[in-house]
Length: 158
Image (cartoon, rainbow, N blue to C red; front, side):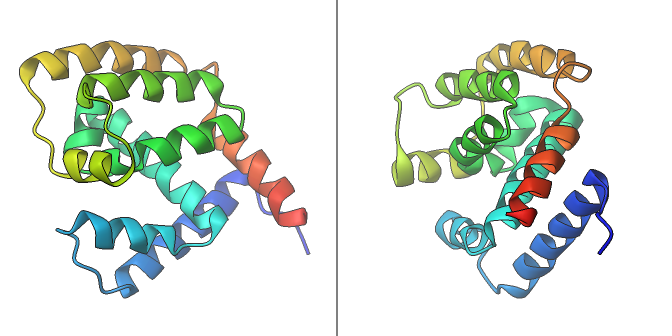
């Protein structure tokens, strides 16, 4: 069997994840149902979903959009996956956004419930802009498609 390119592999896994989420019949207004629907994806699909969604939202509207569109509930998973694929600079930037949106240091379900429908203040949005600039500056330094794709290629062969 011929090996897929990293882009094709990521695209295939992302499409599969989206298809499964569309078929999952969960209440998208309920953080717990949405979170558990994503958790039901395979390991590779979940990795691709959280990284692609984080990258899309941050590239489109910054970390403020990432949190306000409720993808922030996956921030701990995003950090874990970024570290796992050796995208440590990206992981550090996402980690540094957490205290801005979660100043009380809530964990687990309390964090997810708190951040699911968060409305950020102007001060929080301003603080997050520094993470946006840092994230944008990584574009030529830490290529998430290459790192994620290479990791998945090894994972699939394993």
